[in-house]
Image (cartoon, rainbow, N blue to C red; front, side, top):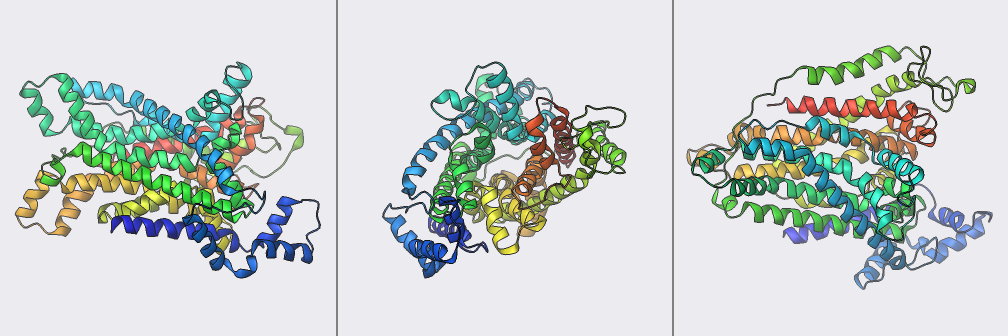
Length: 562
């Protein structure tokens, strides 16, 4: 039944996204005609000819039925724009994305290992494992396209060590993999840090140490216990990178699957959109299933026997300044710049460095950057925090409810946010509402999978078996045992992704689906400043610093939840 449910969800999502260009409020024939011949006058006769050629008069559902029938026989159709077989475009894109995703996954694991190695070693020696969530939050808050652009400028342009763009051999994948895998590894480090801390403070570790087990045996056991939580998140990260790396692919000119899907959706090339979504969803389902299988293999029979041990509740870590400093810095910037005008254009003051008149300098249009960062905090920070809070509620509801939401989480996580936003904008129209719905519709999946993994282990623990034997109700077990154990790590997982949520909202605005220029939105500030980053680095440094402060503050606040 689970396999059948996943298959139905896969076909349903493919149908919805595949029908997107036909219900977007624009005539696909007009978009196809312009893509094929930009100089040709789009008169009624030419549009009618294209509609007959594509079979648009038959209606969207008949088109979907035809495509489904051909897809079952391995025929994914022909591109409406180029006239080439979709499988030809798809084959090369899948190979590129698979290679890039594999290398990025290696980078993510290396970054995660580097961030958790020191606390892990300290915990094995009996010391209190210190958290490195702050460093992880900084790395997770750095936009992928910003990392990629800096690497491109320094490594490729200045030093000439690696190619700048394109795709010929593995040397072209090094910089994109680093840009794509570094933030993902930082997010995994937060999850792994929580899992390792719970394993290192569990009662069984003291028993094994007292019994004289070798240190290597204990270390492998801790890694196995923590790995049962991390493997599920790693599968979702790999699935997300496989289809949603369009921004990195654009920076480095990589002809991958995510870029192909977004370009086809914007051009209303229905067969290519359907094929890309189908492949992306299959990849997401496979990665999620492998993560679930790996978790069960690592837990072994203890999960079924109800013999798992749950770590004792941890006290709130001390250090108020770690929370006050980032929050105070953001508030100070807002109070300092909120009285300034963020929209006044002064071409005579273009790209001025920081000074008394302009403490953060000016952008390419001479607008005061302090004013734009301060006003953007009200848009970016408040909206991203609200979306993240909504994501936590959805994740807890789906993750704790049971196993049925896991298949949907695997599929939804793999969808590119831009493609989902286009689907929402087709019915609700572009704007903040559409952008929020699109981002929340995808962002809930990783925290939900994390919540499900933790809840599954809690239900297999010995103390819950005892509670059931004593007659505890399902509600009592859920409220007093499962939810308190699941909530803090899920909060940290969700809030370390808060800068990514802010950037996703910004990228949708940049595409005309959310905030529109000249709105002072942090993501738009980064996108507008990238062409001038070498000449005027402050146009990118200050918005990026604001995102980092937002991410660090969110993670520190979540870490203080007991």
